[in-house]
Length: 309
Ligand code: PSU
Ligand code: MN
Image 1 (tube, rainbow, N blue to C red):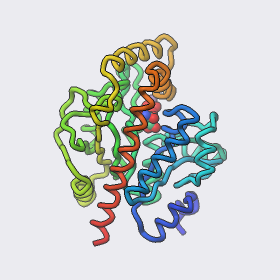
Image 2 (image 1 turned 90 degrees about the vertical axis):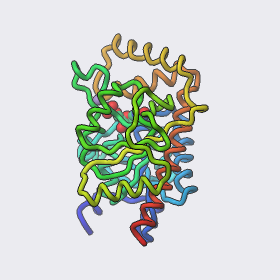
Image 3 (image 1 turned 180 degrees about the vertical axis):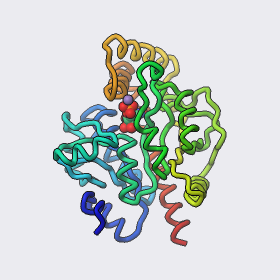
């Protein structure tokens, strides 16, 4: 047994998939504890896992439970995490601390990718990635997701970059870091709640085969960074642009007025959207995360076929 095998606890379903060599998709848990409202978060987290199964792969929701680094939660553990108001938002540097203290934490994109890599998982589905914050020139607030994506070889399926961030700066930073970016049937960068933003995408793919092929080439070339697959929420399911622009402006003002900073910024802005869009943000968030789970599973199945043939 390697050291990481003794540090990581695999859920039963994930362990079976590993033993039988079946495709696995990693899922993050900060979206459950800090991105979605209780109690709907538990139902949505279960539905996301089911989408992965329906598309032929095994879901591995990642979190730290009482200090255990857990890859795959059983249904009770998932429910407990979803209702745990004290679960810490954990990025990469928090993993060891929580493991040491025996505490519970939900993993961000960065921490989830880090643990998934240790567990040998190559495909990860989420809602939106973190990026460069709008006031970063003063605050230096850039998500640790960027640094993690720069050094973790993995396919990450998301619905792009949320408009709460400086989207242009985030794209520049991804380029600097060598993180691969492609649109899934999309020629413009998706903005999470919105299907497209005014930033073109150079690379467009149309099927899971292309995603898998691109990723394998990156691996062969020794590219250390992740490949981001941006799948927009369908245009007829996006948030109304007027509502979005209005709530975004208010939410940014709310954060500024209260001096909210650091790791609280993203959860507080998401929460502002939730409470000021009359259910729209939850509807869109749910739709896109389910779609991303299904696509990630299709890509994992393809990657598995490519490598086992
Ligand atoms: N963006 C979203 N929804 C989310 C997050 C980001 O649209 O739930 C979460 C993810 O877990 C992401 C984290 O990794 O917020 C980034 O937080 P920060 O900006 O503090 O790095
Ligand atoms: Mn931050």
